[in-house]
Structures are given as C-alpha cells and as structure tokens.
Length: 342
Image (tube, rainbow, N blue to C red; front, side, top):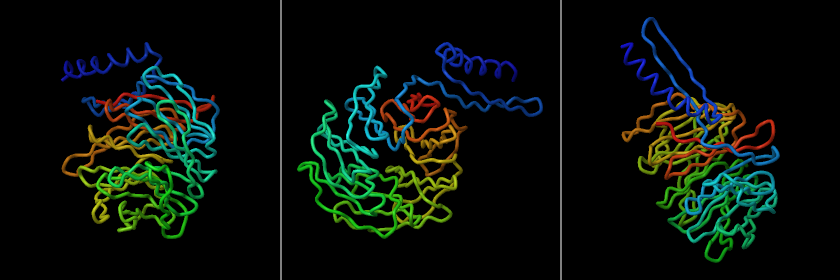
C-alpha cells in the first residue's frame, strides 16, 4: 500500500513541478484518516493567462472553432483573443452593454449591445462590423439555431425575443413572452427547440423555433432566479443554475427534475462538454464545479477546480476541451486558460 501510494504521489507531483516551473498556480488538498491516506486533488495548471484591460462589466464569452478566436464581451466592446498565440487580435467596438455572441456558418458573428438595444453583425475573420439590427431593451443572450437557420436574441428587460434572418441580416419577428424581465441563459438543441432560463418566473421556457411559439414552460422548484443554462442533447437533459447555489437537471421532454446538486456562488454560465460528458459551473468565488454525466443519466461531482476569484464568464473549445475563464482581478480583467482535467 505504501509503495503504491508513493508511486501515485510521484505521478501527481510530476505535473506539479512542471506547473511550478511555469509560474502556474497549484492548489492541493490532502486528507488522511487513520493509517490510510486519501488524496483529494483539486488543481489548476493554467496553460496561459492574459490581461484584458480595465475591470469593466463582463457578460459572455464565445469560442469560434473556425478561427480559433475567443470573443469576450465586456463594457462597450468585444475583445478578440487569438488563442494560438494568446495575443489580442482586435476589438469590436460600438456595443454599449456588450452581451451575448453567436456564430453563423459562413463566417459571420452576432453580438448584442444591451444598452443600445441592438445586434452588431461582424465578419469573424476581419472583425469588421457589417450591419446593425434593432433588437429589444437590454438585449442579452444570443443563440444560433441550426434547425430554423435563425438567430435568437433574448431581450432581458423587454421580455421579448428578436428573431433574425442571417441571410437578409434583418429582424423578421419579435416574440412576446410572459411578463417579467429576466431572460438569462439560452441554448438550442439543434432539433427545433430553444430553451431559455426565465429568471422572473423561475422557470425554463421551451420554444419551437419554427413556429415561434412557447410549447412548454418548466416550473423550477427551489430555484430562485435561474441564470446559467446548458443542454445535453444526447441524453435529453437541461442544466440550470440557481441563485441559491443549486444546479438542477431537467428532462428536456417534460421538465421533470432528474437531479439536484450544489454548486458555488454567483454562477452565470454553464458549460457542457459533450465529447467528455462533463459539466462545468464557474463561480465568482474562484471555484469551478465539475460534474461527470454518465450515459445512463447518472451524475457525479468531482473535486472542484480552483481558479482566481471573480470569474464572471467562460467558454469551451469543444475539440481540445480547454476552458477559457474571464474574471476580474486587482489589475483589471484577465483571461485564464485551463486544460481539461483527466
């Protein structure tokens, strides 16, 4: 037993030494009981960090798998990071209250300006703004739906959804939702449904993206002010984060609660890595809740990853599994890149 423990410790320490040599932050937690030694290892070995500028308000981030650029909405602009070189590739300005970002096949991106009630259309390669489309008050999350080929903009304060035709780059419809502001996280399942966290009513709305009608409303119990939302389309599950530090797992067909798990405080973005079947919930206290999703709809929490406090948003490179975390530090905003845990 001692030889095996020593060998495991040497294997764990090898990346720790390498991380220390690169000025990486490492957090280790050791627990022992009686004569047996149990290690609970929760560590962060940043692949890179990058300062982004003043500590202004951050909303969403999105990774473009075509250009390998990371788009970070904060303040009145979007900062674009070349993730290969970890340098700033450019900025897209003129977006007061910059919020959600979505990409459409063909090299166009759509970014919401909450304070201007508009959406900027930009070229993902040149970063030039191509058009501006009117949206609703406090335009928030932006989602591209491959089933209807439309872009959906959640207008938080207006409690409406602007539907955009990306071929004409024009708004074609406005959906009026049940009253009450608070349209937060949203995601499309690719099969004709859009799921939206409706904070004001503490429910999740399911929208038919072809008929543009709400075809279901899933009431959330013990989940005040739902914020983050992600989908596991393979298992037909909806993940929702709640203000009371709870994560709910719903059946996407009928809204039935499948599971409930604790997470850290202040989560606004949930990320589901479908390839590795892993859910991440970055929280403002610097913890990242990590949950493994089994194929039989079973869920198991890992030891949380530890990063710098102040995380406000995150994005995933689905190919490599890398996480991109954006948070406020003493010197301003910064980007931290994490390789996926084994």
